[in-house]
Length: 372
Image (cartoon, rainbow, N blue to C red; front, top):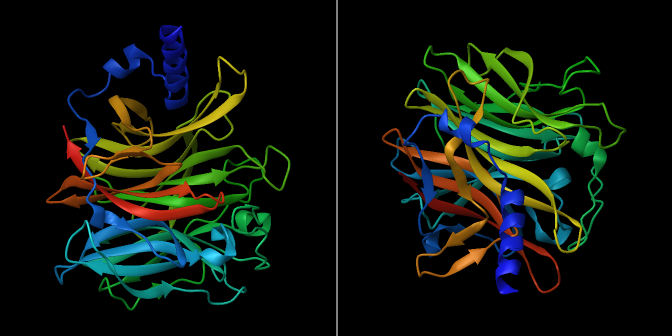
């Protein structure tokens, strides 16, 4: 009986993490793999009164490590879509501890496209300037949930757009634009007709730039719309204008929302991407559908045609602390990679667990990344 139970559990885990065609995997570049190291206790960035989410890291000319992250008051509940703001902290180590510095993309009025919410930052440096890409939105400002009871404000969700802020110094001042960098498409049949969000980008070998972002279409009824897919764009400049391609990536047949939060970069003649994979599988015992999340590695020769890497699984949401204790988190997502001397050394992830009252307690982790 125990053998049967283990077999069934193994089948379910495989389905939720995501299977891969073996012949397809073997066609990918061999020998490239990323694994998670043990997490120092100092690498948990958390706040008693603020929900913390989705951090990105860069080293400044001052020798300090600059962390940019989303935050909002815990008393509001899971109110990221209406009340998130991007803040800034610093440390002498990529693994912390980090000290809060300022809120540098605060609310600035509902008349602006990003006037009420800024969220999900990703930071880059090109040619001596710092570029921080993010999601912003506006709306009615109404918080629709409470702690432990999530309810999405669809007006704010559907007003999400992608922007960029620019500075000569990681401490600012930052130039903030009055128009989004990546707006939704006017064509109602486009894969990003409803909204754009969660930008990721990298510089290509020819000096131009590749963008991957989340787009929501209008093929399904509002307010949710859908499907939720990922779009490709290019630009000659970090601040646009951008050229969109009507080519969705990370698709899974039959799934309306197969992936989220890609982080892309170029290394060893390949475009790499760490992606939150979303899988739906039927529990072979109860028959109920279970939604599973994992972090997986994709690669691409041209940035468009992406396939799972041969050694694709990075995490099933389990981390191991430096003291040897393992912890399975409710969410481990928003992957961002920090590079030291051109090599990926830290994986930053938003994480959370549910407390005794069913309330999300969120934080950010800076996880040692081992290149195998």
